[in-house]
Amino acid sequence: NAGVTQTPKFQVLKTGQSMTLQCAQDMNHNSMYWYRQDPGMGLRLIYYSASEGTTDKGEVPNGYNVSRLNKREFSLRLESAAPSQTSVYFCASSEFKGASSYGYTFGSGTRLTVV
Amino acid sequence: GIQVEQSPPDLILQEGANSTLRCNFSDSVNNLQWFHQNPWGQLINLFYIPSGTKQNGRLSATTVATERYSLLYISSSQTTDSGVYFCAVMERGSTLGRLYFGRGTQLTVWP
Image (cartoon, rainbow over all chains, first blue to last red; front, side, top):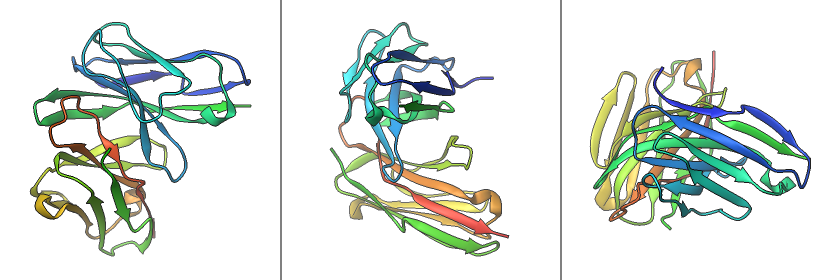
């Protein structure tokens, strides 16, 4: 099925551990995004990639790194996890053309707990 | 960045009732979308509506871009409408496609 696939769906980390969240889309979209969702806060952008080979910081990039491996894949890495990074992480993709953003599609999310 | 405010933050309805959710934004936009997050956490795009009115079944949305607000109408609500509704906007002139989200309206529909 077409869409955005995220792995893993759940993860528990100890403070200081590292991990990478994987995201892949099969809709041939140029743009990909990582958001985090915290209770009562809506979704906040961590990093985004407007096209293959480019990445930019969003609203809350501290403590994260990203890699746009190819057009399909966009990974998010936590180098040294902290309890403040406990959240639900969503990957999304879209086909951005001029003033429009087509097919903004989200993955099913990764629920991360840092203890 | 652009500010997005949604109201009300919480809404509780009996099945069959109608409701209106509001989204105000602080600057000109060229893209506004409404999303529904179901109780399992999945985010679904409901409408792409930078201006005008659209309808999809029992849901409709209206955006008045000049006055910087959008409304989402839910008629004859059903328990499956429960979840969080998010409004998200893209700044006019953006070349990167990023969306700014409001904090959402938590809707609970009781049978």
